[in-house]
Image (cartoon, rainbow, N blue to C red; front, side):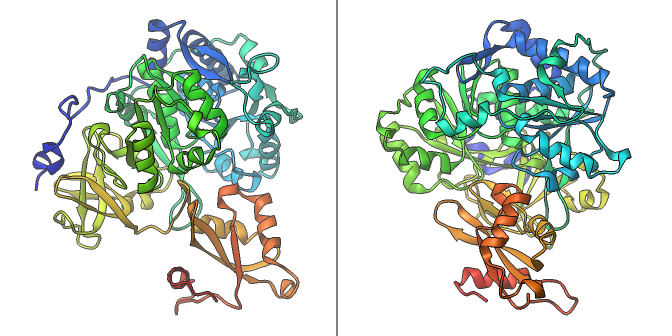
Length: 566
């Protein structure tokens, strides 16, 4: 079966082209164009305060000048270590304007994890939130002088919020507002956001083109530390201009709750809306009561989320009062949408949840469900200009509809390779029918209409509410715990999260008889992102190992699936 005769072409929406005409520019030009077209239109709203496209453009220009004055040159890496906020978008486009490369970092990471995002990409500057600046300082001080940062730029979330008390309709929960307004000391050598914007530095010429590196988001794998996925302006541009799939345009208003450090949030909250000239209402943390009010307050038309958010929204005692009548599109990915929840969306709000599929390596969607013809618990059909196949993972022969195999993807949004990991890059691609296909590591099948369904994973990974947890990374962190001799991370079933993290731990001799599972969990909370922290810890005398000494994690995983322990 050739790409031109793929079954999904028979059901392809007539309103959509098969392929996109993609601008041959850098991503910076998308903001420059939007600012010229819609100067006074709100690009972002944050707790009631609007940031216009004109202001977004001006702040990005000023910050680009400051970055260059701080020593950032073309191709240098600049990390963004923030929750969703307007400053994230300003920072991102400032990095593009400065001809540099953005490195988004999960703000749930702590100092032990953060050091890798400084040393591996050879990061020059970190732009962070005030509550995270201490972790940056700690990670930076632990490095040799030659690897340390040239500068740290610190912003408070209140820098983009209204002055004075918030409108009750726009206010988050008291706990979240307290976090937003908390004062934090500026680390030694740190520069305040307002001072950088006011410094008056004008950037030099913009020289980045479509083939230049633009983004280095990190993803983990079966072994070792996270690896950077090299995305150029061109690989990101393709999905950034794909808004017509979800009926998105300048009149759209989105609710930005998917985190922008993640490739999906980056695409749908920072890159896509700027190209279309639409407005995003940003939330730095999920707050179901605030979200419920914002739908009506701002006539939200588009909401990309993870299923657990919809489940949580339905769990609110006030959900019957939430007005979702303005919503034209709701969709997401990361985890399967339960059939019962999708049915409630349809029955109570008349909304069809359109699931999608993609990876960091594919700049978010490689597959998506057409909103007008979505199937539940389905990855969808290959996206614009994308060729996806199901192949035998051993022979790489294409398999017919209904048979399980590995999902491979070829398309304009596929990354160019892993940063400084030539062997991993080579292993990630195969040549199929004369084209370079990316091996997703996911097992799936295709039905007779060309819709893809995921069935299992070749990669060792835990999916907890859409957060991808890579066991090898958690194991490496746990080995630093003074109580732990060995650890193996596996997935355990969880009614709410789908899966959760379980650690099977062999204690050090001196800790046996005194250490408790809670001690391990408490240590983990201090040293790793919350979603990676084991929720279950089981002690074992020894871990099962192969003749070569490798831990047989699959044996423990199978035992867990069968409900057995020890």
